[in-house]
Length: 365
Image (tube, rainbow, N blue to C red; front, side, top):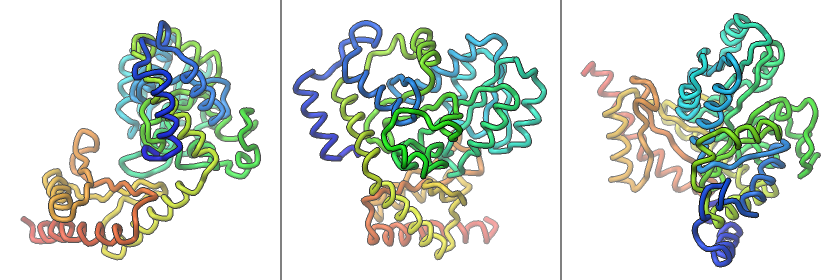
């Protein structure tokens, strides 16, 4: 979407009209019609009453969780062990009590929720798609536990927006695909749907939408609270008008065109199939994430360097602290534009460093 002609034309026109910078913070001089239009579009995307745009979703997660945790009296934050660093940082900044539950483990989460009175403020923070392993959070079941034990739900859809659901709203929308497809572009919530049951949704404009920025979506009261109290929003220079207009054009485009994300999933399945034939160990998962487990930092970097220097393929190695030591990996990013020939080249290039690693382990070196 960063090269989509509709997006680029929109940005060119906006740049010519408004210039480069926004002029200041949102609460002073940096608030314009383009910012408000983007927030209205994002609110409609998630069928929530309101949305708020930040300079990145790292800032959105940090600012929102720190504000909620500090303003809700005796709030307890329940965090999936594999949550993103931005969420962990926000909880730390809040000063509130944090309880960590095992990854996607509903039994462990419930055992920890039941230790606190139902009336005590609680927030369950988790993700839809976990970017380092490709797993998907049990959103509906976590909403069930939140209702049972009096908790709010905070769902990070960063790696899902623009990629899942009939309009690209993420996994929460995808779980009620037919109902959301039938509702079209209506801003009204679908009562009882998974997306309607989630209290707070965060997303990014910097991945599938090809722009920059992050956002939150939820009730008007919640969004207004964050707007009024979060330093990460109040004291940050506003995103440039051309960037904001381009992001909105990208969101609108993906709401109405499903072909890109369909082709992406087809390509992901094809790459995983080819890796399986070569016994290349992809961490299993139902999402578009393709992590190849290496288990050694030096070997992961060597494989990444080899792919770039010998095959002109860029694949980043992922090491500590992004993943635990011993879980180093390569994370493959498959796009709708990748061709079958490029997939063949990737599989052939990756096979050599992987078998080198296997011989290294088998020899006991």
